[in-house]
Amino acid sequence: MDREHFMDFFRNDEKLEQLTPDDRIEIFLNVLLGSSDIDVKLLNELLNNYDISNIVISEK
View 1 (cartoon, rainbow, N blue to C red):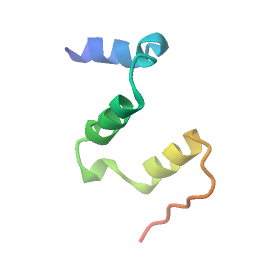
View 2 (cartoon, rainbow, N blue to C red):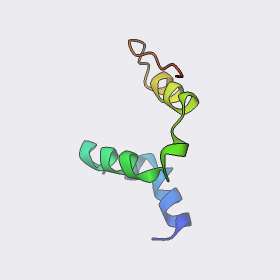
View 3 (cartoon, helix red, strand yellow):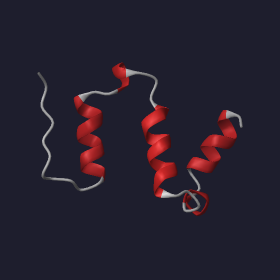
View 4 (spheres, rainbow, N blue to C red):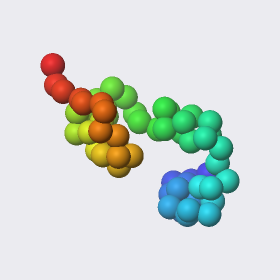
């Protein structure tokens, strides 16, 4: 699958509904390139997107 097809799939809610929760977790855990992709801003954005208020991310 090339990038264009992957992104079309990713942006299609009907197709995304075909994924199981385990499929989604597997994609989420493997899609980032490396540790430099994970930062406070990304983690806070993730928590905000899912309305999670009982976890606080702070920098060292």
